Image 1: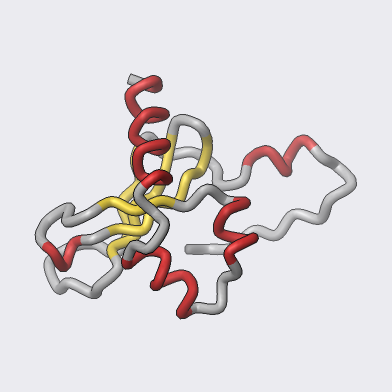
Image 2: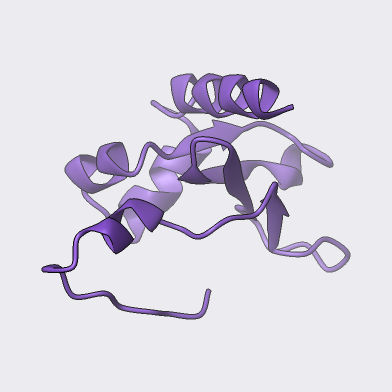
Length: 102
């Protein structure tokens, strides 16, 4: 299953450029350098055309789907094989760690 998720994440990353997800993050002031660093992706029409998602990888084998448009019957976020976001920073004890609630 983990290989399938890795492949999904790569596919979503390949679909990010010129997508509604790229427009979404740019409109929020996130630079190209930043969104490339975090390997954001795009998933089209999960539930309908209003169900397009920003894909936020948490690790190589997990990610979060963020619905781009508010939808009354669909949760804004969905965890896929949940993990800790940006877990690699935990290995560097010289870097401050900020814990936030999504």
